Image (cartoon, rainbow, N blue to C red; front, side, top):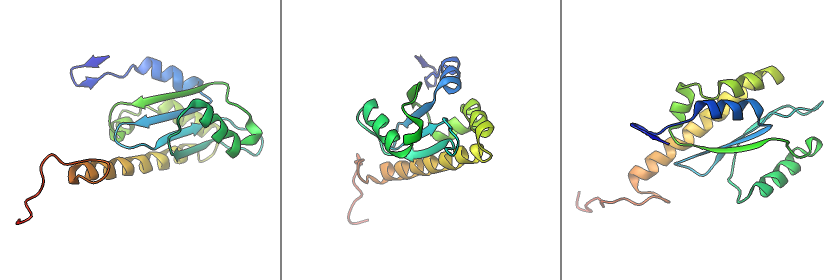
Length: 149
């Protein structure tokens, strides 16, 4: 749905996802990496928060998780969504508060893990923005700088 200021986020639906997902992957508009949060724990396994490369299918992500966290098996509730705004807005709106609280409840440094990953994706977004402005790959400038300047 669109609003006056662009795409409107359904925060009620987002809240349900954040409450129920075992594994959650968030995509962003300006760069390909994903924020992956695996809230599952089992004895020695802690929650996992990571910035990861994109994959082609959900089955590929399941295999990826299986290699990294074999003791946990397949997730029961896997969700993916594309955040349509900036990482800064995601943080400022505290849109992931429920997820942060879930992580903090299951690991002493759970909220710090999420904060660190959000800093990483904010840096990726800054780099992508600078690349777009300068016309670096994969972006192209509309106007070329005059070589005589």
